[in-house]
Length: 315
Image (cartoon, rainbow, N blue to C red; front, side, top):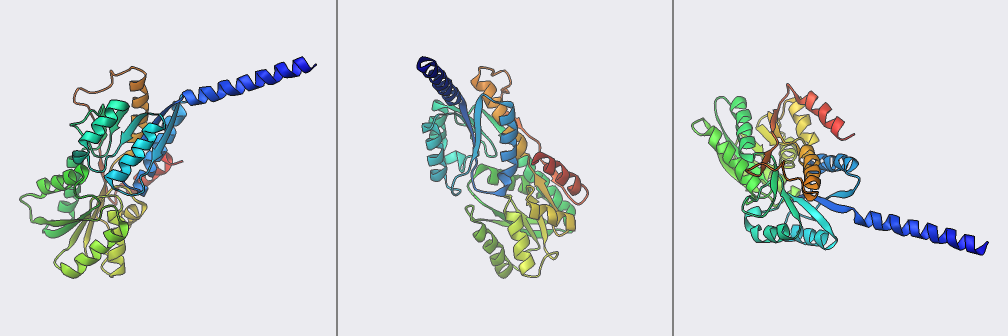
């Protein structure tokens, strides 16, 4: 009897060890964002959907404590030390991080998203064309202000490629029109500072009659500052991304429109493609290593349909 019990216990322990070993064998893939923001909730949903289709992998989205390159790099170093097989990253400042990203790409599979780093060893970029997105924002501006206007822009990271490319797209499209982008103010991912930048503009630049939020949280901060000042509806607001406050403003007409990206698709497709790449399938990688996910303009005419679509993603 004792022998039977011992044998049974040995089998149970062996099964437990095997299960543990199997769990440890799962490759870890991460989606690392640039700044803490509600914008990335859709990407979290994309990672979650991909996890359901990739049972042999452990997937997770990771936020740095704040939008600083050094902090993001420490996070990635920790993930690599913990056994990461691949990372898809929205780098804080790709141009100044080339050496670091090359080091990462030499250790694990590296994808970029949101803001590309083409001069690194990254396998592929999956995300928006930020220049085209900027041009779409300019289309909203031109439609909202046919007689022209003076605009102030607001963004998190002035040095980031995604910011510079969106700004350039706006400038290219409004060139020759009566609309002027007077300046762009940065906030380094600090939302309190983002609102203060708007408040400072109202005091120092009374001629401004248009404000553009280039990052997802900038438009809600513009909305809040103008509402507090009693100027909502007096200054045209153009946004980026689909923050609930932004979409609510579009629906009520206080925000002219917003250019939305598809972070759900970035994350969902990115995680699945990374698994393919790790398993040896590289046939899907484009020759130019760019997989552009289209952006689109949301205004009063299509905001309800967009809200329904996003709600279905986040279920």
